[in-house]
Amino acid sequence: QVQLVESGGDFVQPGGSLTLSCVASGDIFSRNPLAWYRQIPGKTRELLATITPGGRSTYRPSVKDRFTISRDVAKDTVSLQMNGLKPEDTATYFCNTAYATDRDYWGQGTQVTVSS
Image: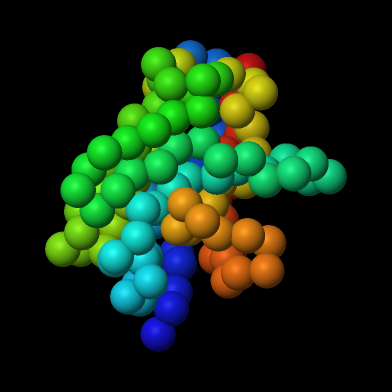
């Protein structure tokens, strides 16, 4: 069964940190690069970071020096450590494969709000 469950979102002050977690159940996730995305209402979902099953990662330039993606293949989990959070990081965060489109299955996401 394919399932994505994101967690860890919260309300934080600028400069704060959060770690998001995602349980990605299903063969499609275990054998593909995984990614974290975020979306602001009314805007296109944006890709933030990807990680291969072997641990190779890529990042969107705007988060490269602040976010770290990691993955535990054995536990079907992918995480996103976020430091130095800014108000513009406020969004709903999702995990999925690095190839996911709007027509694919998506989880509920987890809300991150950065505000003073």
